[in-house]
Image (cartoon, rainbow, N blue to C red; front, side, top):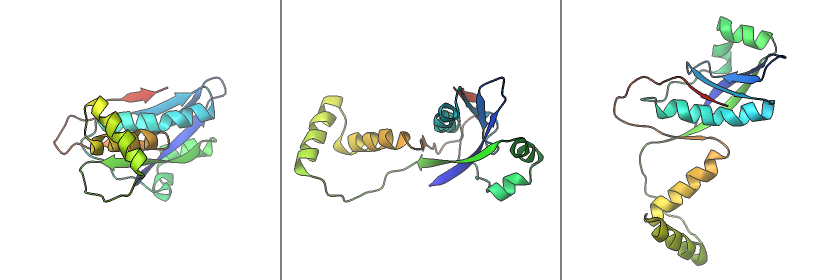
Length: 151
């Protein structure tokens, strides 16, 4: 699992803002700290949906050497770690589930017109997205990411 560091800042006359120094143009905002932090994973996912590959994440020590990050942290900014799960290919997995859960999943998958595996994968992705960004990484070359903001 990768993780990216975001810097949360607040101007007393404005909302809370958050940016990812490793990801140009990837920002989030909110009226409260909690709202801005919740929007961070969304902003990260949106930015990476347009990315052609995941950029290397800097450590906090590396980021502290950057003048822009030093300025943000020096003026009261807070460094936050935002985890991301990169999803790029399938892997066979042998798991055990209660028969009732399997039956319910099969019924729901059939109603949705998808396989059991895809249904379970989508359910896990939805659950994980409540806690971290889940990003599908494309293998083909794509255009550079657009500036995306979540608020």
